[in-house]
Length: 495
Ligand SMILES: Cc1cc2nc3c(=O)[nH]c(=O)nc-3n(C[C@H](O)[C@H](O)[C@H](O)COP(=O)(O)OP(=O)(O)OC[C@H]3O[C@@H](n4cnc5c(N)ncnc54)[C@H](O)[C@@H]3O)c2cc1C
Image (cartoon, rainbow, N blue to C red; front, side, top):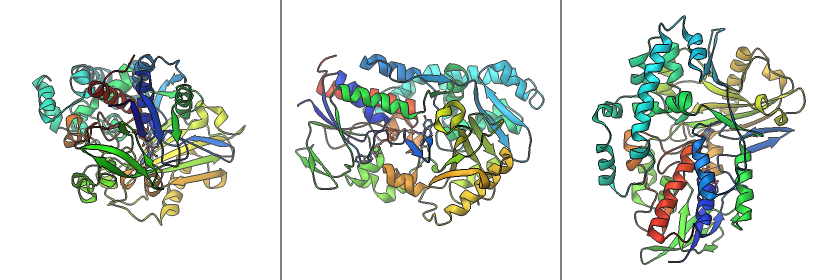
């Protein structure tokens, strides 16, 4: 087998895999559907404002450090740790909760509503920290060849953790906290996985440990797209070509291998090995036409929340609003359980707001602010029609105006809106699901779509819908795992 790898997709999973493979001596070439690299980790520039298009922060920076070390490149971006991780605002209350990593500062926020908060939080974090350390390498960061491999891995995890498989993040909150505010705020981690605390297994409360103890939250100096720009410089140095506006839509096979991937213009792309960074479940259905991933089957899977995103340029500075903010209502359980199925209205929406220019003043003209709003909404399975887009946007702007004490209807000078339809079209995200395949028990670790193809020996997958899961650090781990698999199967050319 030769050493020529074609990567379909230039998201974070694709870009980091490209550099890992190049370091190991593979000859890498990339094709990308869009006209620029980065996938969901992207940027919008408009009317003098700059916005992060999708991701605005992340945890587990050490996964990027591992990648830098593995590829031997100079770190091409600078991370900034956030002091206030995020603020939470409940509708109808003037009080804001500020979430800090510092446990004493955090406890001050809750001491009047949650007796012995510090002690309870300490117990919760110690328990999730212990669990994280017990599963990080045994279950999370490893390849699985088959179901038996997965079951054997699970058998190495202490049995005391078993209930966390069927309990939810919300059950975990109820074990430690009494106040609704503490329970709701610390269960928001489930939304970072694109689901709700009521349908996310309790095992994922490890994210509370990574956010509040292990690593905190970080963003990037100059905006998140600096990650992509930095990686692209390294990609160029390695003479890796990325062919844009090239979407793989078909394939040609021979003797159990892929002989060529075929783009929308009928051009054949030949290589020895094919690495798919397009959604691992969707691609198997759409391009390889696998019955296990037909539309009917995909529709039955659990998909993460779909985003309705707003990119707003404001002609003045907004005071007293930190970088990251969650604006919640007063019917958390009802809203969470119904919003993704489109069985609740958007009259009183829940959403996330990032004041981009707070950490990167250059992203807005002098005296102005740039704001990103992400409202989790049903995907196209449940809400295919977005003709009411402007009405929903208007409701969000009115609600946000009241809560930020500024009339946004008067002060917005630049506005871009992306619905799940736009997200689906831009990056081939299944029915507009923003974070890819969900993380229910049936779709966790060894039960997610594999990072190697079931049928073709020279096809592999990297990215959010294969192992280990969604989010930027996971995409970086995903490239590590698939490159380990490729080098094991096809040989380490050099290091
Ligand atoms: C609104 C939003 C906010 C988010 N916020 C955060 C956050 O704050 N922190 C965090 O850690 N994560 C966040 N995420 C998740 C994070 O963006 C993703 O988990 C991560 O970027 C996924 O990277 P990837 O490599 O798997 O895929 P992608 O970024 O989707 O890249 C795949 C690439 O493949 C291309 N492609 C698709 N199909 C084809 C084809 N057939 N042929 C050729 N090319 C193709 C696509 O155009 C795309 O460029 C957010 C996601 C969204 C949508």
